[in-house]
Length: 352
Ligand code: KG4
Ligand code: ZN
Image (tube, rainbow, N blue to C red; front, side):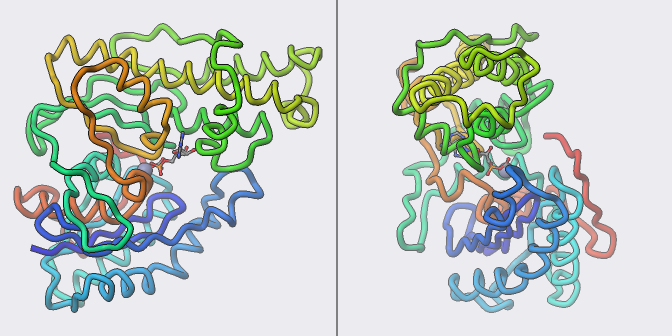
């Protein structure tokens, strides 16, 4: 079975063909990130316009690389939420149209669930891609850490899962992006913070971990704490504008703030993961989302557990069609999320 996956929930337009829920035949990603970088964050209208320009060529390329014609495709899976309304609309309308004219079943895919399913890609025919050796065994704990989401989800089986907790305000990736903005490190902030943190001392400043109910998180406090710390470091009051801080901080201050922030933000997640592993007695953890690329996260998890944690190739950690095509294969197999092409609508606030 071959499924075409289409992803356009944020600033990446992506399409992929996956075979039997495990083999990545293609994964084409076109990002409009460079168009947003000067604004320090994704501008929804620019993202939507860019999706319109590239979505058809991206799909054509994905079919070509996978050496597929439309006759080889058994279904189309498309992200219908969560995400930016205008961006989601482009992918969903394209998928609806293709499902009708090519007469293919259509599956509506949850973006966050898609991130988890990147862990099921164990084979690839694409050069330069390293798949994980083995798909995760159930039950597993999914640690979903991206620019839009921070969630802990317990998976008992395919489509049988329980949300244990989530962020009550900012996602961890968003906190990385905002702190990077304060430090003038550019966008996207996650990789920039990670590099700068490598030059700094993570124990230099003590930053707060919000005390949240059970498995919930909060990242808005640490972001404000970084702002106050930076103002303090240059001897200014809390009225000093955040946009002018980076000019006044020296490189060593920036590195130490980045390292201390990264250490604490990651610890916030890892502390709850430790708690969940004990309470639910799981010995399988799956990492999903862009922040999964973070080496400090990987280091702290390695120190916390004596079992092996597999990480998907970074190319399927950040937003991509491959994760959606993989999820789509399982949706087709288990008959989940079958959509009527004439009726499928977007759900920007879709939850897992
Ligand atoms: O999963 P993703 O591509 O998009 C969403 O669905 O949100 O995640 C993007 C997020 C951004 O906030 C980016 O700064 C963060 O992942 N990120 C990282 C790293 N690489 C990407 N955060 C920390 N360390 C990294 N190495
Ligand atoms: Zn994502």
